[in-house]
Length: 112
View 1 (cartoon, rainbow, N blue to C red):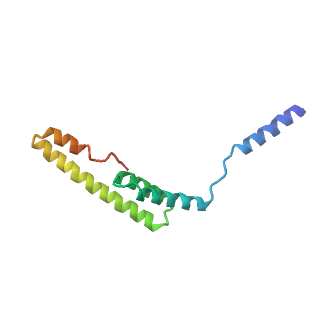
View 2 (cartoon, rainbow, N blue to C red; view 1 turned 90 degrees about the vertical axis):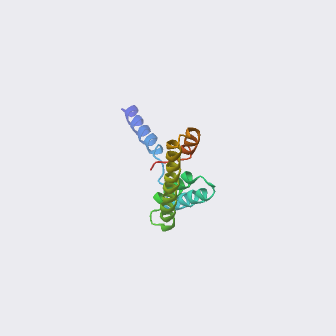
């Protein structure tokens, strides 16, 4: 019977060490700040900027600057993509297939 107790105690101890510690609230603030800083350094890749700012906004929904940046960059990305797509369609209709294809490739693949 002692072996049965030992196995139960071992299982309880093993399962207790497998549970990851909860992240403190301050860590999500730091992660959001790091994502926002990363977005600032993405250069002209608006899709990555949208992804980073929106991830920061999800981590810190009370932080209005992240939500505003997410919405602003997302709107800009949509405008850019719409312009590139319209241009590609016009080139296609004008039978300039090579330029239409290269212009269409400028449309981002970001989908959220």
